[in-house]
Image 1 (cartoon, one colour):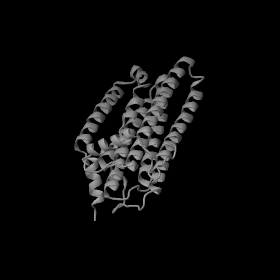
Image 2 (cartoon, rainbow, N blue to C red):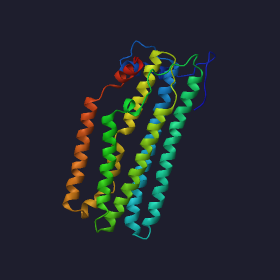
Image 3 (cartoon, rainbow, N blue to C red):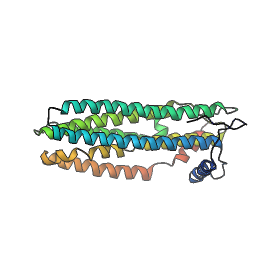
Length: 274
């Protein structure tokens, strides 16, 4: 992203970006706060990064599907090579996610360098603050449950079902690594704020980024691709476990969303801490 600045040192933003920043503030109960070029710049780069992340995820899901269907067409002789290619793509996915995080961090660092002074949090932000214990437990349980079901499918006699299970395990490993990388980024990059309002916005962005990254939508998407093969050969217990896993995951996600404290309330609690 080009480093565009005005004559007074503020980052150049389009009027539409300032308008979107104002709508973002109003949507978080901060309508009295005036949108600034700093906030507009930070929100704009996050929108672009989220769009790029969505494209990366879509490409990854396509790669998983092609790996599965390619193994069916070519037979077992090419499956090992296809799995190696998928493993390399998983590593590329994690690297690309890290690059997106670095890009966002770079824009934030440049914006923060122009601030006349830097505000800091009165308390240290940890994963319990930005993500919350229920969401962290749910994300860990979702990955663990999906991995356990995939391992269970490895015990089946059908080689196609075992091949699908290996693909699932590789995909889950890549998605889990991406979540860890993103959470580490959110917890380590410096604060970009010079007053209480911008400090509140900084916390809100971290909390919402962490919550969005921990939603197991990608896990459910990966499961929807080669799992149909396992359905054709798995025992009844596997069918019941898979359906229970999906239904309970959706119910748990809905309950967490309904009971989770709003991000703006979390931010105000952090900023007003003694």
